[in-house]
Image (tube, rainbow, N blue to C red):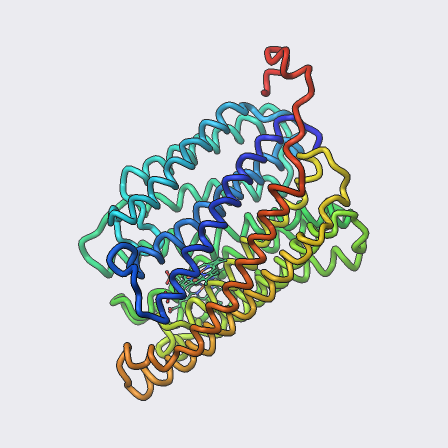
Amino acid sequence: MRFQSQRVAYPYFVVALLLFGLQMVFGLLAAAKYLGPDPLIGLLPFDVVKAIHTNLLLVWLLTGFMGATYYLVPEESRVELYSVRLAYVALALWTAMGVTAVVGYVFRWTAGNKLLEQPFPLKIVIVIVMLLFLYNIGMTIRAGGRLTTTEGVLVGGLACTALLYLPALFEFDNYTVSVFYRWWTVHLWVEGVWEMIQGALLAYLLIRLSGVDREVLEKWLYVIVGLTFISGILGTAHHYYWIGVPRYWLPIGGFFSALEPFVFFGMAMYAYYAIRRSGLGHPNRMALHWTIGSAIFSALGAGLLGLAHTWPAVNKWTHGTLITPMHGHMAFFGAYVMIVLGLITYAMPGLTGRPEDSRETTAGFWSFWLQIGGMFGMTMAFATAGITQTYLERILGIGYLDTQLKLQVHFLMLVATGVLFTAGVALYLWDFFFLAGPLAPAPARERVAPARAPAV
Ligand code: HEM
Ligand code: HEM
Ligand SMILES: [Fe+2]
């Protein structure tokens, strides 16, 4: 860590990880509900629990992305952050918004649009926080007068994330129109601009961890971004198959979304290339685990398991079954959870003032493998449940609830592997909060004379 203002990443990581822990509570609760009977059905029915589970995911990942950016941009632009205070104000607003949303869902205060359930006033807060964030980062880069490709792609991804949230501000009476635009946010986030964020964080980490040439890796980054746009934009149509829009979307969605896995395979090759060129010698081996893990797991979860049901001839059977969360869990985990955990693990020695190899704790190691094993098991549980569900419900025509009863064994497996995964998350939190050490204090110079350090 070379700039004092990078320290502001730490409270962002704290908030992100606490919400990650809370997300697991609601994940386990959602899974337990499949087993029934459900004593909490009056207070916290399935739909409320699922909305909280998925919204917490989005909020904590975005908190992680913002923290990561605050850590990365000063280093790349070689200048202190424009305003640390603004970053704190934004975090306070953001956290208050997240907590209000979760409490609001319990009292059924919701806009009701899957993943975009945030009520309108909260959506406005989200937009304000995004603008504060982009302003702060923009002014920092301006002051530094230096924009690297890596940070350009990262900040570009985040700016587009804010832009693509705008369609979510509108409400439509027509359900088809509403679903049509919902995907402009949801799909174009995870299969568009967030891939820029993953690609940039991956490049940053690989450059730092493997010492590979920046120039070579950044050339690859252009290829990744190019492929993302070619495949991802029209790939949106893989959500338009059955929503009441013209039929020409079927071949468009099938063809372009089938190209999307190349982005993730590209990123896996990128990581493989970096390792082959420069080895795995960096002392922060846990950060290496998460970084390489993200490249591999996203290729499996998003690339392979996305491809598995993206073709219309397959999707007409699997659409909206448990095949969807099979893919959704592994994709989100591989692409976005792992890369954020990788960046946090990488940044910790600098933030706490401890040696680079201090992250190789037993808890950290177990946390990694329990999460990998747990997520693999959960994916298998969703997959076996989803295949059986598709066959019984869609091919044999057995009713939804009768089918669910026949899937109980898979839900047991989901709960068991979910517990393993949660144990991995708990160990990560334990490691972060109790073993990694507190944030190192700022040097006295900046505490006594903030006026001489305009960036703080
Ligand atoms: C990191 C990248 C990705 C993430 C995080 C992700 C996540 C998700 C999630 C959460 C859903 C459920 C959305 C909802 O119903 O509201 C979904 C649906 C879907 N995803 Fe992905 N995905 C990713 C990449 C891909 C890719 C590359 C493909 C295709 C090759 C793909 C194909 C699909 C399809 C076809 C559906 C619709 C399933 C249905 O009809 O029910 N995804 N994805
Ligand atoms: C203890 C671990 C977890 C358990 C037991 C769990 C369980 C569940 C359950 C039961 C659902 C509802 C599926 C349905 O609609 O039928 C769900 C949805 C979802 N979960 Fe989790 N989850 C866990 C962890 C995670 C993690 C780590 C992520 C992110 C990587 C995640 C992301 C999601 C997403 C995106 C959805 C919506 C998927 C869809 O609509 O198809 N969950 N989860
Ligand atoms: Fe999609």
